[in-house]
Length: 369
Image (cartoon, rainbow, N blue to C red; front, side, top):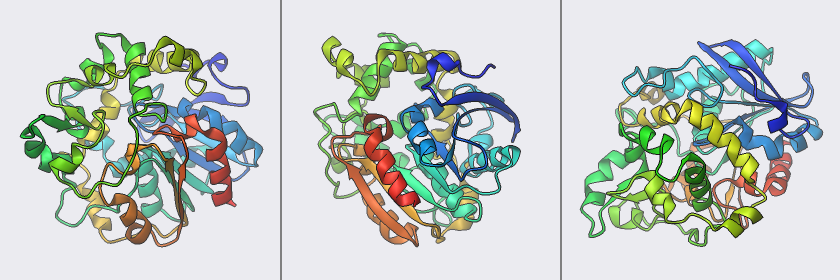
């Protein structure tokens, strides 16, 4: 696998392949000079290292060496299984932490100034800081609150599994997207959607962004089917639909697409090309670990808090902030010991570092200083 072509990256970002990373050859984007304080940026789903493209250079210009890998299961990183019927232990949370430790060791980085994670990268970053505070000395979480490690005896059972029957029994039958992502057909549904991969991704990113009119966010009262049914369908889907069918209802117009500066057609073509080659199963396998007790090793950290300075950045129009009732408050008051503030960026949806890069960089620099 070759690095990403410089033509596809903003000036100042370089791409390379780093072998020998916990069984992987990892694709890494970098900005800034080696030897400076390091920022490790961990992307989410369905994203890639390139999802950080709009903030990497400004962070580097502020004096940091910025490192953004394609995580296990994503993009140009290779050495992982893309099968559904595979051992999921390599995708377990503790092994994802090992991936980042191995990357830093290979790069000769003994500790990072901060680890920053968005979406699925947020729990990875949180667990990095929880498990190895000596290496990950600050943590910024984005879009997905961290409510703490699993309780002893919980086997990290996905809450979506507990609510599935109640959602299916609603007058308008629904299903949680975590449950859908754990099913065998999900990867095939998304890699070969009826509307085409490019159009599917356009609708998906639009639906969860601040541009979609329906993203008026408010706290849910509890983990009940009736409350969860208030979430948009990209989180609590109609029971009979696939994800491509779900987001197709909200496909933006040609005029809106042309006016979308935070995700141009050229930007989107990179995502479509990468996922068209790799598929989605690697990322989906990370979600599946939540249903199968694969992360039970994290129960050893039950009751432990993140001790390093921590902050949260999300979009004011991001349902990811409120999709798990109570998680945001628990993160602020119980899961962390040195909380430095919650920041919700006006107008931004789920892809806050892409939609509002200037505000995101400002908030990160305030925290990092």
